[in-house]
Length: 471
Ligand SMILES: Nc1ncnc2c1ncn2[C@@H]1O[C@H](COP(=O)(O)OP(=O)(O)OP(=O)(O)O)[C@@H](O)[C@H]1O
Image (cartoon, rainbow, N blue to C red; front, side, top):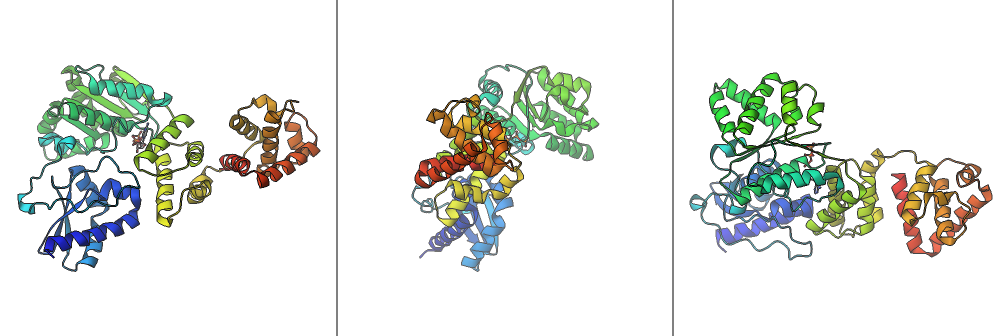
């Protein structure tokens, strides 16, 4: 077999091991698009399709690839990650039941002859702009952004900025709590603008990076070049601007850059964790300037949005997750979208690792640490509310005298859960349910227990409610 042929085989085995280690999701996003290049004097070249991936693989996987590869082939002493057009980005994630890893791609050319350029769909920016801009995450596109009430204004504003011929409002100021999609929207704007018109110079960077570049320019007495570079872009995006609060000279420089760009009618997009007027430690004139354009806030997620995001994400990674598990997650993980995605990834990775389907129980086991963190004492009122919502009856019917089964059964479930999840005595529980007698509560507990034993669908409902309330 040729040298390349056996390298390909070794790479296939290494990839198999990596897949086991990192899970299907990370594998498909990061490792599947890689191909093996040449082995030269102990140095193995791994080819990646984009610069973004190169940086990511270097920091996250290169050491592990080297260790695994040298296990396969002792001739491999080091690994170099190289951007090459021979490797194809796999941005559209394939479903889980797809055929396993494609055979090694068409043989890459010898590395010395490779055309080293990003694929056209992913053109990052050219020349110096590229050095200043941070890499864009290929998953952060408009298509992958789920729109709901809490983020519809921010989304619409971002789309407008990306699609408009002329600057529609300046600046666009996006703000909201941690992990709610600000960075995602900014990257999406950058991708959309670059796709539409690759000649437009777009810079995306965090306020922190802006500050470090500024400090470096000061140190190397290069501030003129710094100013020119920033002031000659078409679109400037600065993420997490609150970082420069209290950093006076960076603020000053930023203020001038900002004014210069707005005066030239170039688009500026800013994100922060607070509204312009609430940015403490920011000069008044800058705060007021930041609020001149369109200020769009992203509100905390609602249950529906969380469910939508989970559904989209599960589809995207080709994972089979029962709707009940998605509902459970959307109920329990309310902090932010990053945590929500993290929880889903953990459940999927675990199921793949142990080779079993995802169930409500397995999800709860995998996430027990996370869920425990949000543990709290549940009240009878919360139980009544949740149960009423679940069975679609009025909250008032928890205490009403109505005895129709459609109302009485949910009421019994709520009594049962009150007994299980709170320290309240039977008479106390009875009082909270329209002054009922403790024997009524006792009867409800027995009835629900009995039904759980005979009706699996009912048992599942009760279990779901219990888990949701219990945390
Ligand atoms: N509406 C949404 N649809 C799909 N994914 C979303 C949505 N909102 C957030 N996400 C995802 O949640 C994660 C966190 O989002 P992002 O990094 O944009 O948050 P952020 O608001 O910039 O947070 P931070 O304040 O920490 O910078 C990302 O993986 C992002 O893709």
